Length: 267
Image 1 (cartoon, one colour):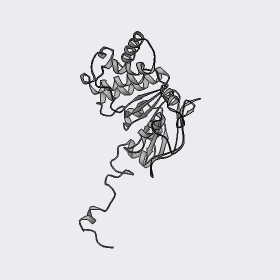
Image 2 (image 1 turned 90 degrees about the vertical axis):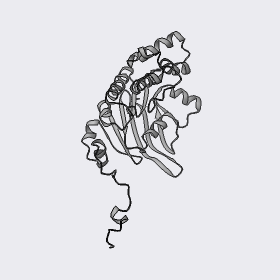
Image 3 (image 1 turned 30 degrees about the horizontal axis):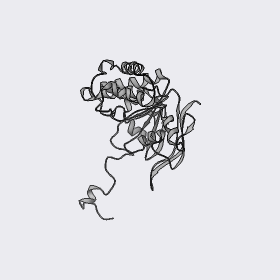
Image 4 (image 1 turned 30 degrees about the vertical axis):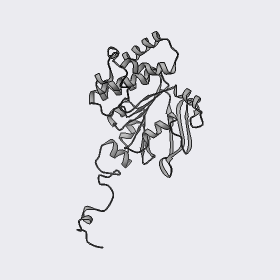
């Protein structure tokens, strides 16, 4: 198979509230694919559907040749063993050291001896530039460093698929650049596939091979970063160029201020 993940005709919602509708996506092996769109558009929901935390109302999510939704717990955990996850803001265990955070999935998912776990953790930390911070606690490192520790933890098991939920949120420009560079380099070094959910156009476009734009639960555009920069779709153009008004209006819909103040003439 050339695609590690395929989503076909997916519909998802809570009760009568539809979140995603008619979603079709492919995520080729070895590529970095970005999913972009405004808050509440359903981006993170797609990651949860890929990981099996949520079940679609209809359609299929296929990961490494297996349809996710019918899998029983044991089979789902086995499939998740092929995935790494970088949660928004890192989500490190605050009572564990940097070393122990990265060692956690190795201890939970393998029967490797402690000597080998020790060496693997230091190798992963070295890959993100933090080998010498192994003994520190999360409270003793910066936000950018914490995100890199979380990235080392996400790749601890050499996953085929790495899911990133807003990896650049809350980072300074230097840390954003470092994180983006690591995502691309680690993806290529591990021959994995990365699915990147982000609002950040500059960093995402600098490393992504392909981009999907979602608005109101539907895919409104997709293509390479270069194609999206030149897109004439009103929503994509507004998003990419950070325009204050457009399909996403500045004013919340409703009567005009003139109407509220009684200044509009009756028809």
